[in-house]
Image (cartoon, rainbow, N blue to C red; front, side, top):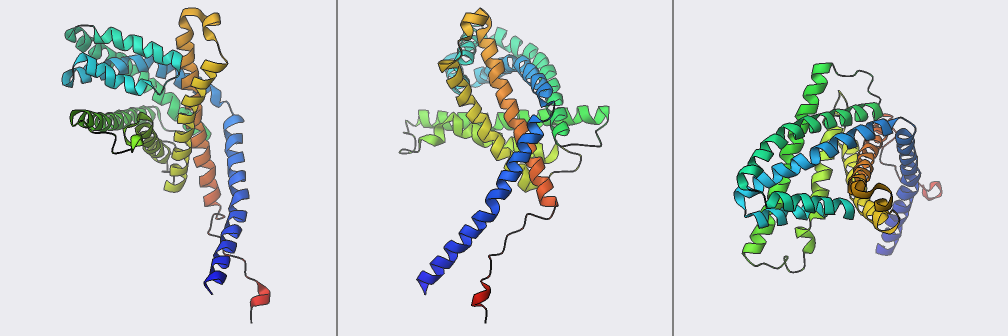
Length: 310
């Protein structure tokens, strides 16, 4: 009897898979068409440009905060951990900036942090405006927000992103410092708990899910499409970091063409790939929402063998 039930469950699972596989392919295909069939690259360029302007002021602010709690060497070491997510050329650019800030006087770093806050706030706000405009364009929003509402939404999204980044960075820093102070090995083999990739994955998934849910449309997007888009975008973003590093190391030799600004070019490529990942997550969330609202996404019932009926 148990063997029959096992075969029955296996048959039901196969039927579920046979039903959902073409659905997933159709939604994925429509998501790619929504992303590639539009002028999304215009928004990708705008977001990447303003993100590049905001990155280095944010780095100065980060070191300014770290310098209040740590020695300059510890601050550089902790900030350098997150720069490992970057491709080699951009990583070297970050390391040089970190070393310059680390050897600067504390007052100079604090003053730079204040100036960096003004510059970074302007660039980040403009970048979030470009991001939200691109998300609205992808989502086919037919009732755009007013000028003041759109700017307030961008500022609110920026503040929320800053708060979440600060929280995740603080937790990650506390975990690493606690482990170092207590001379703990990485939880007896659980190395992923101390990896910057793990915490970046969690932060990206949570942050992008909330952006898709509350900032992509006037009407909040359902949770399941938002989570699906957040997971896909976070996975693609981390994959883009690895792919851009592999591309720069193995295929592209920007130094021969761009000379001293090769690191900036590498940084722009990395940013544009990550922005494209975010926009793909938005397209996937949109198509998933459309599919669900069509009333098609329901748990399929297993086919009944009519011959088995009495």
